[in-house]
Image (tube, rainbow, N blue to C red; front, top):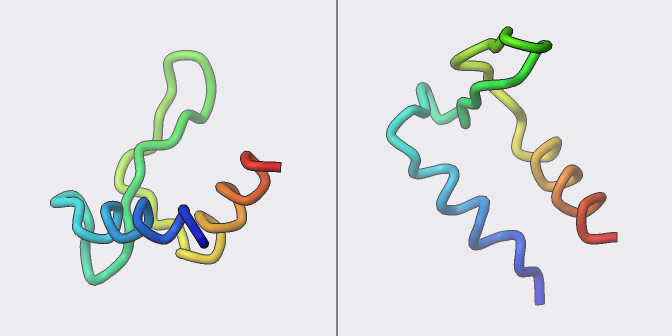
Length: 53
């Protein structure tokens, strides 16, 4: 069973999302962040798969 799908479903319903895209705050460097960065669902799923292996 794919245990990543429920996590993705929770991310999809986050209040920060816009236009159906999942938004993240990403670290660019020490003390530097980028907010409201859209990430494709496939990239998120790939990242979780890499983390699991």
